[in-house]
Length: 124
Image 1: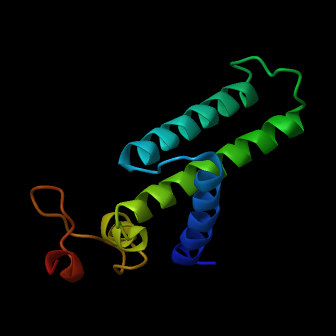
Image 2: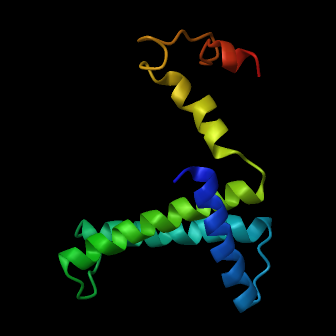
């Protein structure tokens, strides 16, 4: 599954949820929902790391909650990007993958401002 397909599936679920609960998914909602999920991920992480009450959950349940919250954060990031018309595949390519030495024959030249010197980056 690619990010675009996943994002469209998540959009269908999010839209259904919003319709059922009368939620207006505006710019603010997308940002605050992401923050909510990051907070839940933080709590799951702290519980799993023994830095917060486990509320009687087993180690397996704590691990499952942590994995679930990671999925929630990723899903909200994808939904927020879609809402704002950001193509995350393109942005990850531009921001992160340009630094991958396997894609650049081992090294990346950097200009003064820390910007990679690569044809497709400079052409944009």
